[in-house]
Amino acid sequence: MEDAAIIKSVTIEKLVSYGKDNPRASDTAEGIAKWWIKMPLEIVLPALESLVELGIWKKLKRDDRVLYCPVHSPDLYEKP
Image 1 (tube, helix red, strand yellow):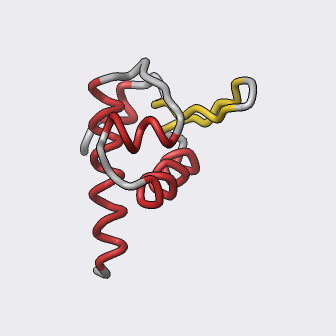
Image 2: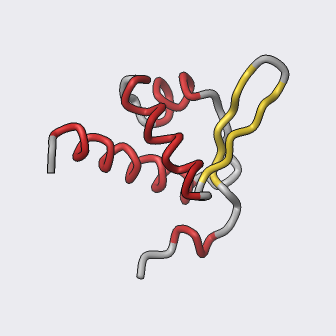
Image 3: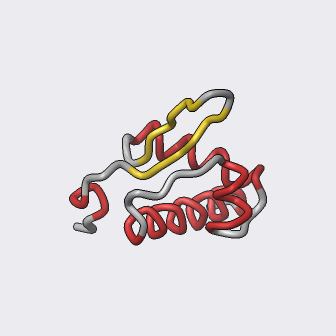
């Protein structure tokens, strides 16, 4: 696996874990990167978009901001 793919995978794991522990949390990509998982925005944003595409997270438009939040379904976070 390439370094970029590993970094994205680790970032997704951190986001899924945070979403599982904080299912009602929401924030901008910048806030998530800076405060939730403390990783660079250029790494966090593609991971967030991947989770949105998979239906595990949602993207909400509020005024002039875009917020990301986990979908409130515990079974989405269950590991087989």
